[in-house]
Length: 125
Image (cartoon, helix red, strand yellow):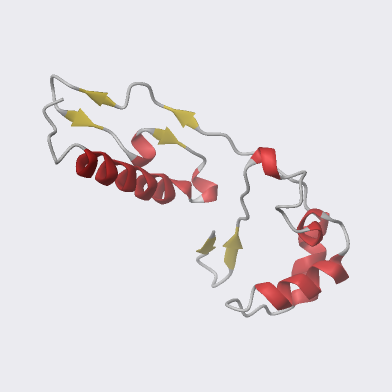
């Protein structure tokens, strides 16, 4: 996730499933502490971003501590009698610093679409 800051900088958050962090799914350069190896990886895979200094970014990234961000999941997500359904931030509270609210809202909208299609748009149940 890349969010533009007010000063023209970009806040980059890289997320991965906890159960995949220690296997080969995540590149070793991202998990490592070698800024030179990370710089080579960034130059190859992050072409959409123009960095003022790739080396400085990679040094800071390698020196940063890994943080875990949790989510709070609502249960239930709906109230049948009122015909109310909650999605996105309302159903999945996340830290605003990671920008996941929109992601969960889009994932929820996709799931709702699939369920409505599967049940022929019958929302009586």
